[in-house]
Length: 507
Ligand code: PEP
Ligand code: MN
Image 1 (cartoon, rainbow, N blue to C red):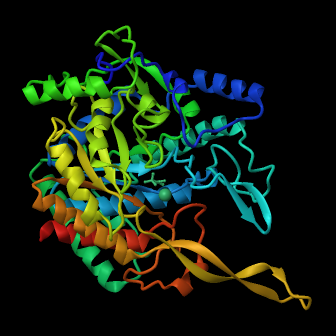
Image 2 (image 1 turned 180 degrees about the vertical axis):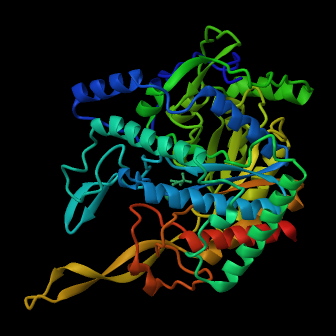
Image 3 (image 1 turned 90 degrees about the vertical axis):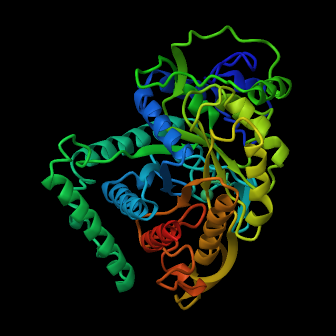
């Protein structure tokens, strides 16, 4: 359990006493108070029963019996809360998951970066646009992307707007799924029109036919009567960056009846790790113990993660995350010393719950070989060895700049639009694939299990990453570059990646 006396007093607000990075200063204290008071009274967006259901499924991933597919936008905008964009993303995740089920021959747990992915960490707090210096865009929950210094000031009302956009997205997800958007009895109704490459379409068609045949056979012999084929689960997730928001949605609940009994540490290695964890743990006072039947659930999403920039052992984000019952992720990049990894796990998962922590590794195709083995070795030498889920995020270490020419809003004196040369962020499909393949090989060679992938993707035909079967080049990037943060795989590139990963698993 998260609160077992190893560390000091925790409460949903104890993070406020720790140093924090990527912090937010609201100038209007009155409207901040109003916004958080409102959030405190609004109902949970997800329930403890659902959170525990995901944790139980992630336990199966940690044990090597299931695969985790997580994906969605880098920065979800409030404008993305519309029927078409939600459906496009859900269909893509479902299509990808069918391919992965076929490839890995395992159940696939689906988690969307959606219904709350509104806060972004930034490398620089300020940026200069057209000669005007202003605060950087930090996500719709915080400020507006409009390039205007006033619109870029953090606005507390956005906290409440984020809640309602998250609720509307979540509501439509639930309604669409329960109304047959993901009915596995009818996979051929899923449009394949957007898969323009005939060879990709043929491959997918073959897989859909195999899946359909299997489902039909189950129906024929009466194996589908227990239900479960009409819809699938889709859990929600986001980076737990804005702790004011996360705190407001963190509530004390009785554990639901689907909570497994706590894992009891049994080995002497475990006892040693606990003694060490005591030395490295954060606070000094002991908390009043909670009754073992209760816990704090962050009801903003089923799963939240700590970003690579905010995982300092003694800082606010780790402090907040250590007290919640949700399964949680930690981004692990090249700057994580292997010697910090186990102390971090000791703080976040002192009870060694299996599947509680997802380590989301994101090094870059040229760095994974140097860093991942040492991180796996550190965990394997600790009592956490069989408890974590290893997930590969092949996106965040593979960013690069491209120089493109865009039609500009400015025009010459004769009225013709002046093309403008600018630098934008992109990623190469081949680098993404290379990091994924290496992750799989390294885990295999170290008798570890790569349990999942974490992708930035969209259901739209954007042109933000180069490469893939469509052969997008840097010249094509300006055709439909719509991201407000990192470049995403488009529907074709994402599906193709699923085919290729499925192929790796069948090797
Ligand atoms: C992200 O997932 O969008 C992100 C900012 O990742 P990281 O923390 O790994 O840089
Ligand atoms: Mn990103």
